[in-house]
Length: 230
Image (cartoon, rainbow, N blue to C red; front, side, top):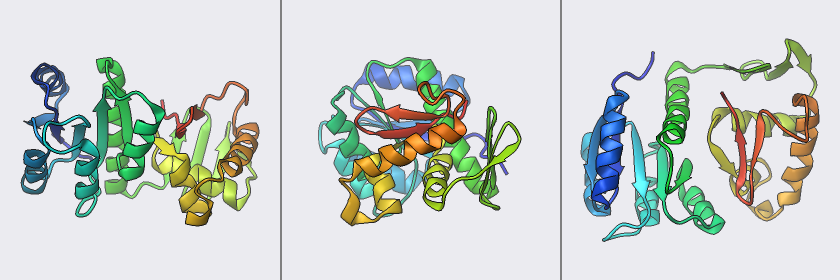
């Protein structure tokens, strides 16, 4: 089962940006609704049940971070943040609040579409209960907990597998250090980024042809990691 005619809500106060997004997204088959304020957007989220949300952080009534936190009280709807706030801390705050990905303005429509397609693939995988992930020469069998490179099974430790499986389940999207640390080691280790550096280095040596220039396990500097799926 694939998601067809996906519905997307754009919460953005800038009229030109909304028009640009609506025109380009509609051309790519999205059913687009829009709001220029956070409060109206939250109402639309409850009433219209979109499949995905594009959210600006600098709204005129309530901050976008507040919208994310309120939405996460009743929905796990995928959220892509579009914002002029380019500081790493702003990205981390949005992602830790519950956003799924973050794109800084100005942005290219190709990059935006790539991020949206990654979110759509994750939705479709959830609908399909897909257990096999493949990209390039990398294959991960989530059902059997096995990893293959060039059709050869590789041996990885349980913690390495947990890191990889989380990245696979969010393929194409950034996963923050804090998200990984909380999921794997618990809240008492949220600042222990060196744990991740050690295990990511080990994983890259097992998966990547050139660990110094990774093809799959990408670093989002100061934020986290992203598993490339294209």
